[in-house]
Image (tube, rainbow, N blue to C red; front, side, top):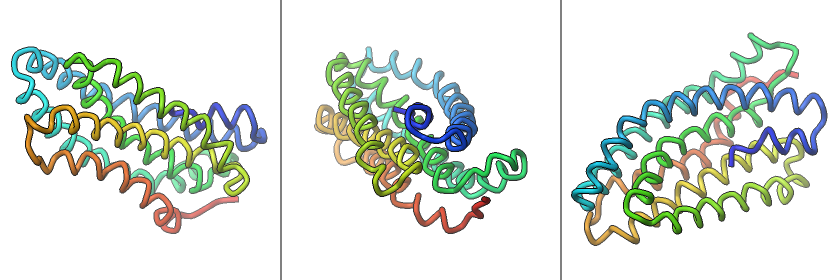
Amino acid sequence: MASARLFAVIDYSEAAVARYGLVASLYQVGASVILAAFVPQTVRLYRLLAEDVPAGVSLALRHAAIGGSVVFGLALIGAVVAVPMLAWLFPKYGVQASIAIPVVLSVVNCAIVSILGSVMIGTGNARTYVLILGVSFVASMILPVGLSPWLASDAAAISQLLAMSTNSVLLVIAVVAKFGHHTGRQVTAWVCGSLPLAAVVLAHPLMSLTINFP
């Protein structure tokens, strides 16, 4: 679903492809660090799910909410400083906030997906998990085409954020629907579902806080 660079290569100008390539590299670094940080938690989670599903789901939601909140805060800071930083390091690329900010904010979903995806696999709900991935993947393919008439070369970046956030929200809904009777009305579930939506809502306002370079 992190397909912004792919669509840039297929349909955009060489200058836009170069910008997307640079921003995608920044995203990959952030996503790799986040996923690596959550690996120990997923290993512990698989063990707990095998012994006590309700406790495992509660732990997963708590870790996803706390870890996702930390990543969200860092992503907000990164979204504000990304464009000036890239302009300083790579002035010839002319990276715009309308490309960098949605891609940077999409890393928020990595923390939620890595934990809640493990819940779906660890509890034998792989088919539901694959279905969610499939729906989100289809969205990531359709959105850039549908948004292009209005957003031009920014459509791929916005689509990446929307598709990945869709994936996270669907995962939260699936976990709550399947295990809500075990976990009760946990605030952590609401936090997990709110973080991707907040990233989508704040993407546009954050663009006005950064400096665009020609």
